[in-house]
Length: 467
Image (tube, rainbow, N blue to C red; front, side, top):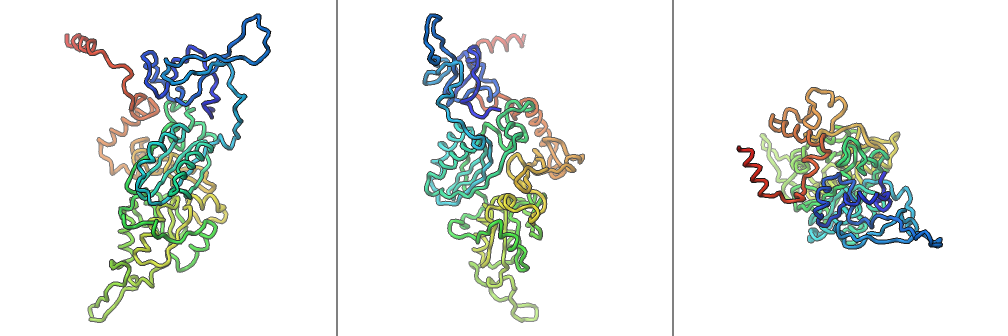
């Protein structure tokens, strides 16, 4: 297993021409750029070592000296030290805990109008440290989930929190199994050019996106920075939701609640978080007068009546939860703006609950959907039993995969009737690309041609074909 580029075994000199860096390739190395990315050395690699042996007459018993080789042919800016043994003298051994992989989900609501300035340095740092995943930057803060070695992930989180506005990130950490770790590093025979399907993220890829919101509700006036509900720890959650006058609401979408939820929770059956405000309006018959009671209405007999749910003083006590806690921040802020007085939400979300509460004491039923290639997790945050339909990105069970509507990479019982013939054909084409190359689009996707084709030879070739 490759855990650190600095410990990569030395390669024989003839293979040096196959290594590439981020600088422009020479014409001799251009054709080698199509090799799988895990065989190429990143630009941060200090170099490859080769021993320099003294002449036979030398009586020196000192350690082998080093010679340097010009790297102009590799496009690097500094000479590469050459030695036959890895330079372990100045290397501090890293503990297994620091080398093992972790997945960390994090977020922070903050006043962050210059969020775009962080994108490039953050993405560059993640690529340098080989940290993968996805991060969203917005004027209201940051939201992300990343995977990498513990020390690398800690460096990324430290960089983010170097901005005082983002200090105190809310984090949830999940372990990665040795099997997932091997695939994460690209050691998969079935997928040689990218991470296998069971890896938490693509091992060589990180996305840092700029958006209007870190979690999309579509209501800019709702701001968790100004007010938010009461946090309830995982240990106190069972007692709260067991109270008879509490209404427990699952803030997630229908494809998430389908595979697991808390006992007795109300399922809004929304397909996106944007629908949640409309569900609240419809089910609680809220006033639209800034939380004040609605005008008194008259019934058919002329008597004045007032609906019980329209009085803010009589609003139900609400406890809500979501995957990691971020959606509840906005949802609780929304309910408070609508006149609710007691709004609670699970701190750290379902993930923190599954991490801290033993299964024997748990009120959670089923598995928790997660937005990475683990698909679902169970108690202890171990990977669950669900797979992902790559046609609709929804979780599927073993029974779903046995259904006639299921076609790997194309459709499942939940999306089969919603897809037309052309859409299914495109999905089949993508799946063939993935099976052949390990990535969609083939090994050259996103790369510029290493060498410009000779226009003269191209014209002559076209002429010969026409003849």
